[in-house]
Image (cartoon, rainbow, N blue to C red; front, side, top):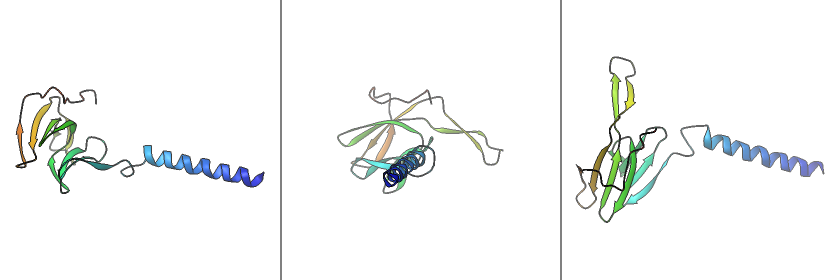
Length: 126
């Protein structure tokens, strides 16, 4: 009976440690990228650090709120991080209040601005 109790207690503590590490510690366990087309990935490094990368290099900088891959194109909605106080050390950054829409052409690796695609949007609540 004591052994069963100890095993159960150990499993409970291990489970709580995994939950704590996943949701409270950072950077780490929840950071990472997912392939979104050809050699491009959506990378989430936590907070506002959400970008689109190619071969590990940032192609569309933070913060990418939404994307949609259609054929050879990726439609992107992003809010830039603007410097609020450049004299402060380190400079204070703030999330822009406007949404930008971009099209990334994976065939020729170019990015151009566009009007709202309709299927991608910025999260203005965060």
